Amino acid sequence: MEKLEHEFWIVQAVNAALGPMVAALLRALGRPVPPGAQPIPDYLVMAAIVVVAWTVVCLIVRRNLSVEHPGRVQILLEDGLRAVQAMMHDYVGHKGLGRYLLHFAAPPGAPLFIAPIMLPIEIISHLSRVLSLSLRLFGNIFAEDLVILILFSIVPFLVPLPMMFLGIITALLQSYIFVLLTTIYLGGAVATEHGEHDHGEMVAGSV
Image 1 (cartoon, rainbow, N blue to C red):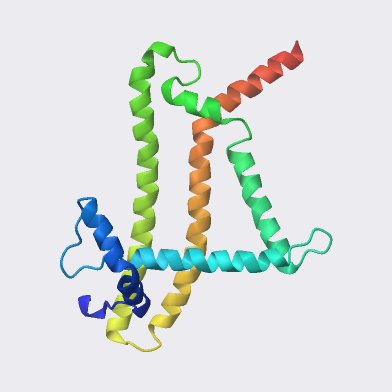
Image 2 (cartoon, rainbow, N blue to C red):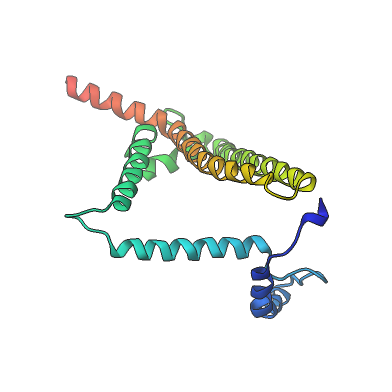
């Protein structure tokens, strides 16, 4: 499997242009680059390319935005944004940030003197959710890449292409799933305070 790994020419070009400066900066920070390693890893180069590419696409699309005569791309983007906003409103609600941060130290209905105990527990609980999502996403991507490498090692031509195309589809699906899971986690964190708020409004309305 190691023989199938190769370095992209653009990674080599970026390291040739910016590598010495990055290596000097890392040495100044006490993090020298190991011998034979690139100062700028390939995943950072790829991430930067994606950011630049999407920035260019957004600038091009922005020129054609219109309130009176929206195009197909604008309508598609607006529908996607509305879907995300509706999902956030349904699961999380529209109430505020202060109450959400307050429940870390004292959940609704709990006495304030337990704040020193509840604060680290709540922080660890939320960090564990981030870790869980990260490990799940890493496992999905690693398994997909491993299957492609195995197919490529058996038949290096054409056979891995369907799996690579399927990877694009699953990447879009995973993006939606992980946004949904994050929204559900946030909704679960503020569900109690929303319930108490709605109950208070109902009581006030009945009075």
